[in-house]
Length: 112
Image: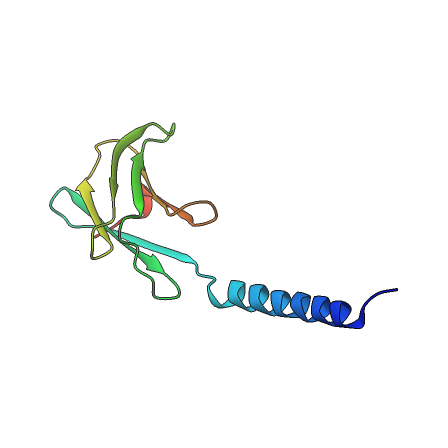
């Protein structure tokens, strides 16, 4: 026969575990944001962040050609910005903060 104290303790532990995990996942969810613009001086600047206000400092940035070959690689600076020389051929910018947190911006969409 089950000990009532052990059963009640187990049920309470599972309840606290469920309450501890599910709300935390909702509270800490954030969406990546990235916007790029042409500086009209041969460079492009991208600004990034997250919908919860988190900084994008250190987030990997890649500039790739249409076949996926990496042309330029770097990281967002302490101001969550990344500036690079504009490629002469078709390109796309990848803001890569990890699985489920990446954004692709086509060079065609980047204007002054």
